Length: 458
Image (tube, rainbow, N blue to C red; front, side, top):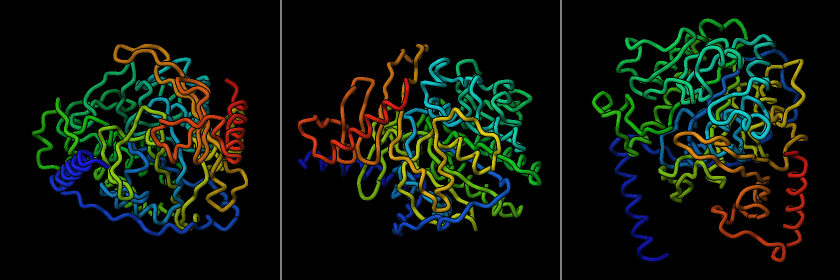
């Protein structure tokens, strides 16, 4: 490493340390217990319909939370849950928020339910997991970032009985995301007397708590879609200048405070479940929606890394994931592959849904929570075309697609078409491996990924 690079790294580390001190965010040491334990020892999952809360963090890549090895942020509540959960180390999203959310809701790859309508819409031709759960006796609610056109009819049509959301779709009134936020519930835009001076995550958190109060004696599903830690990077109520900060500005030194505030809200939710004696009958699924922003420079297992949101590289798609169900799931780590299409069928299994949609691309990872790994994936697939139709702020994009396993990736659409990468060695995908360079083991892996791509009919 040259002296110039060493000096640059030192400057970044000093800057980061100063920003953490400024926001008074203590660094939580990483969890060191990496012993793999089987979930449930191969026992069958319990009957019934537990409550399910799906927590989705915005722009939180795999390298950020401490339970995955992050060293820059205070995620103590998440770490506590993860220590008693099954932590999945190999979950891949799409590189951007709107495509990820459509894939999660539908259980379908984006070329099936995304490209017809594009950014900021959900195609109701495809039944969402929320509608299936609703039809199976669950009361459903979404709070936080919706992203898919926040007017009452589309959200309820998708399958949510109740909602309190912020949106950034094409037809919605987009306002501030955090302080003085423009939020919607079934009655319309929340009036200024509710939002002025208030923090959006406090309002949506209270809404979720009230929904729990109203539905604690029946099975419920909450899609808790955090706005945090998405830009604009601004102070939270933890910071003394929260009320006086100019909302037209942003400052990346607040990323630590924003991450910590998300963590605090997760802690408040768990305390609510405990207070109402619901914790043991509630499954908590926590995940990030895509990689973190390039502006996020985070210490991860002793190395400084930057996020690569919007890129199909590892740091653009690798996200944290754990499932917490006290008394049912044996804590441990899981290295099996998880795809974003897998969440819908997993929720169906969690809810003991009797009649499931048959045309899904996902594979349920619910049996893995109990040590049953027979259906675990050997590859994941991504089709990425975030703007199939041009928008005022975004030009039309061209599709990219690829299949990957835990170490290798093969593209079949886009500028890297035909390229094969060992991304754990080459995370920036700068050096494709050509056929005359392949070892016998790599030949077998490439053939496996070629077969996977041929199975996904475009």
